[in-house]
Amino acid sequence: MHLTALSKHFPMSRTAVSKHLRILSEAGLVSERKVGRETRYRLQPEALLELKEWLSQYEQFWENKISVLKHFVENEEANE
Image 1: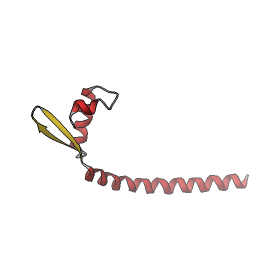
Image 2 (image 1 turned 120 degrees about the vertical axis):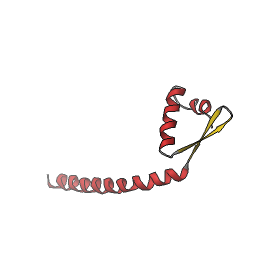
Image 3 (image 1 turned 90 degrees about the vertical axis):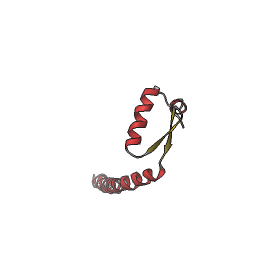
Image 4 (image 1 turned 180 degrees about the vertical axis):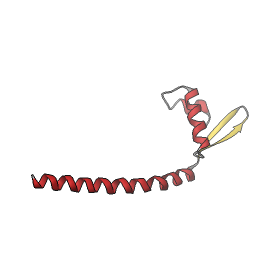
């Protein structure tokens, strides 16, 4: 999809969308391909899978911490 088409889906300027796409491209989450004068952008789903795996480590960590906190709070309430 080209920049103008993408920009229509977001409440920001084309310049702002372009900057976001540049960052996503540098991160490997989006690929760029020149077609004539336009640059076409494509989502790279395999990169998102890597990101999901990386984030899942933190998700497990925080789920454990929240579970411990919930248990602590419930025990404190029961002791009151």
